[in-house]
Length: 364
Ligand code: ATP
Image (cartoon, rainbow, N blue to C red; front, top):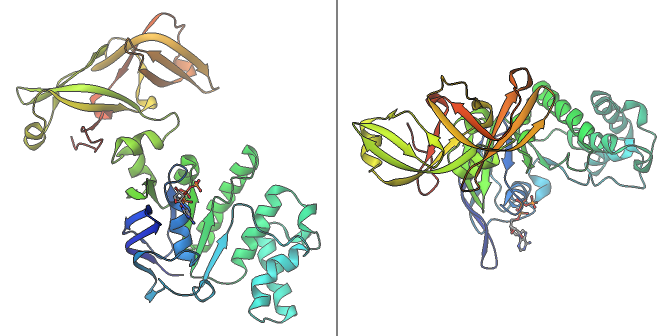
């Protein structure tokens, strides 16, 4: 295993910059998810580790080796593709053993190792079958087995679960998590599914338009999103975001918006200075930090009931404000009451997030 570092890496296609000044390090044994919307540069980043793209500027290191211009086959990496890329004319045993064949291992050794890895991945009984004779989930495991059959410094995954149905996807996700715990591999995993990144990653690199906007452990990203983009991208339903006007008086911060009542927030002197009165900020509150108001809350927001969706253990209650902005609360069904017309949701000052005009998190 080895670490991977990007040293000021930029990748341009013509005059379009797909990845801009990337400078992250993936530690030895870490499972890092590159997370972001379509086109933000995740796959390009992964392909630069694999050697399938060459950076326009900067350096890529695997361990102590500068691999920026190294041929893919010399990098000691394995890659699992979205479409599995299995050879249709080979049975599973030969598919899995293929990386050993190209490295000139004997047939006996190849088959023994393929069986060993297939057993770990619970497909040992399928080795004689052809790829067309197995399910999508089993194909995904075969592709994983092929990646694991030969020891690599780094394992690369490009949305490997996206072709699976919802149930298989959850099962495969749990399996990958288990595998990571067992093997402690260094892995870089591309996904646009925030739940997948939260479940699997030791650290998440959230990307927006070619830039890593936050690189932190999943709970840090969730609890302290660095920008409104991250706040909106991570979490389902996403964080509620509301433009507010900030007023400082008596050293306390007051937030103003239609339908919003907030307790004055004590802020540090430095924060108070930075927040001159009348500044536009964005207030953020996660759905699970809102409750149906009973009168004891420090802060409330009110509007007309827009939707009340029953999810089993929880319900999603959405209110719509006068300015058409919506706020969604996640309420335990046991705490639900009949709702109609005007609804008030409450929250605590401890669960407020604030972002400046540029969308950057303000430390409170
Ligand atoms: P997705 O989730 O849709 O796969 P992504 O985040 O992986 O997206 P990339 O595939 O890295 O995004 O692409 C980043 C940007 O670079 C996109 O706008 C894409 O169109 C562009 N791009 C990627 N490869 C090339 C190429 N070979 N030539 C020109 N533009 C490219």
